[in-house]
Length: 158
Length: 163
Image (cartoon, helix red, strand yellow):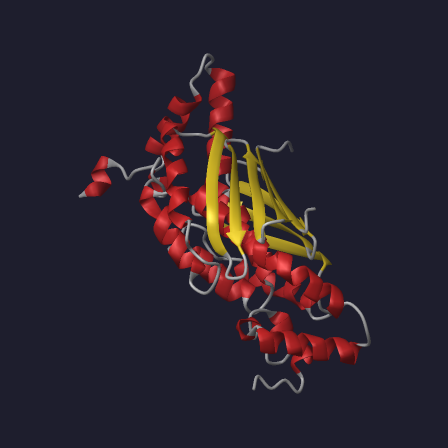
């Protein structure tokens, strides 16, 4: 029998050419909460954020909703942004809000790549998804060096 | 406005008959479909088995990351876990998605043990609940100041003495 289950859902929509809106929903045996945040694509800065607590464990937990506003102005591109969210949102507010926020933040580049791939597939069939992804990474130095599939560009190696 | 990207993550915990806990983790998003299966041995929550599969992924190299998960076998769920797992599977020569997946599996095991505590804390008067929360903090002192509910100025912390 399943004794604990968690679902985390993130949806991304481009409001315009400069702003990405991410919705994050967490639902598990203990907690249910949700975040919506707008991100400036160029520098990853959080422009606006809202949160909803739907199920939680203590009467104090809803106070964490206001703490979310500390994320406004934070950049998802700056070094150590995940630690900063844990420090600024998790500890003074709610660790689970911080988890949703981090997951949304980690979807920023995935959403950008998915959008670029979708456009290429629509405009230039036939296509190779691997080639499109590789080409996208080569043209976006900000995501290079993040994992074994995205090595740093040759120019950055020196 | 239509969605440009969607990610769905599910993690499930199931105790097994041989004194172990099995965890299943699945990731499905616009670019990737993958899963992790792990087994944790009680009572010290040592990772006994770990395997990963990727059915769909954005880069050819992603499949090379699958073997990295074997490195976490033998690691115990406890203090410093994030740093240990990131050192073994993350960084520029690892895979962020699988690393997070392993950490989310470990977190789910902890939450599996938290559910009964939370269920007990739901009952009784406000005062009884406060006392039970404080008893929980004495057993898990790392939770003190971990969130707004357990901050120094929280009403739940009135009269709390860690000793």
